[in-house]
Image (cartoon, rainbow, N blue to C red; front, side):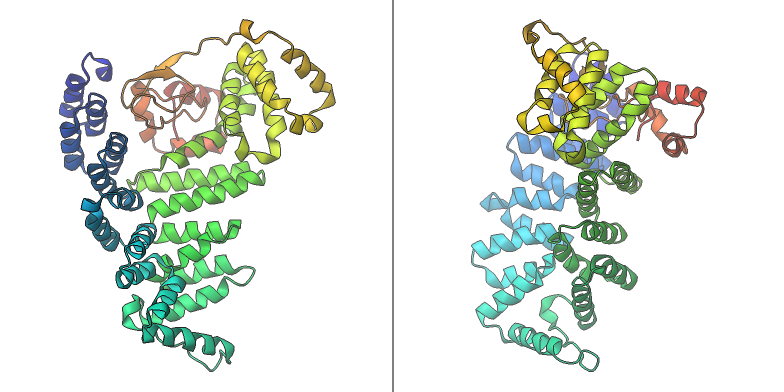
Length: 463
């Protein structure tokens, strides 16, 4: 394989000549050739490449360059966060927040300006971030009459008959037109009702007002319920706020996981990941990790039915590492992990997960019939227990080898795509399987013959 040639830079040159800039840049980064990686990122314009380079530069302490690449990769929040840390680059951070109009970036700049006592500019960025309430409070504190008048007139309007009163138009300096200001007020009122988040999202999407959508998001973010997270996700997808859409989907999926709705959480994350992929936008690593974990949980029964206890054990070990996100099934998951590890010959892993299972706070929830077996396992000498050595597979992006069930590459730091049927790492030789038309729907539909399953399994179909 090209990425395994001796000398990272020479192998990167071959990838570059073959028209594979992302693979070439990953090897340039690994070899410490920053200028070549920077050049390729600017030439290709790939958001993923910019973000990968930005993360590496941040780790190396090159904050200004990292911030610029985060901005090029459209992670405006991270760009502003880094650039605000240095006095010489704070102006760049403000310009990025203003030009992108990203709500989280604007909120960071607003807080920075407040700390610097630049209150007039802070008010503008507070409104841009959607924190209208704090902006009005700051205007009132500074004695700006127009803002005070708006606050008083809104109060009097809400206390009067709404069927005859018309909400006052906000002044032009608040960043919203009169129509947008009225729409924002209406959707804020909707949030107070039981079906408020869904109805508010429907109204904003129907009106197509992106400024109101941005202003509404902070209000929804302060609401911890699932409907609010779903409303945020819908708004962000419609208005192409990609990073915020991924964050909202992750929040909603976490809430579904807490209630035990694992399939719903899986479908949500997969749909958003596919949407971002189709839009050629970077998929956040946290979303990839959450999707991999839930998918691994859903794979276990299928692997056990195929007598693949080694695979089932590896998937359960992955799930157990994230056990706090499965609060309704902590004991069943840990119990299954111990049992499958024993069947797969992973004695040391079985022992360590049995220790986690037999914690005092979990004892009452363990099946009495199994509690005795678990206690017997813990009486073994752990120093004599061994796990079977796991096969290693090269990372398809940088070539660094690692255990086939470990999706975190220790070489390039990327989240490695995984096979939908085994949960293991993808390999470079079957990378083209990602492009098969209908492959994802066919696999997830579950209506495939054993022959087709064997083909997909061999080809390493990914999600």
